[in-house]
Length: 68
Image 1 (cartoon, rainbow, N blue to C red):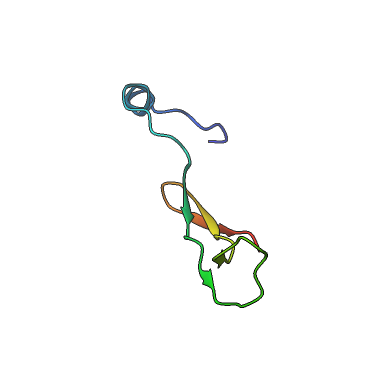
Image 2: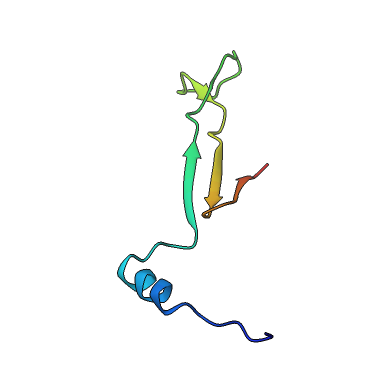
């Protein structure tokens, strides 16, 4: 059989309980304090830039996106 047939029961269930095909979460680390004596006037503490990673996931697979 070369044609794919849809399952009507499965299609009806998908309409009643829709689930998104993909989901995502963003994880952000807090800034890390820098110990230095070379700070601009009026600044008492400096931080490394916070880092973020995004997790994109589906029912069976996931990918972690980490921008450098």
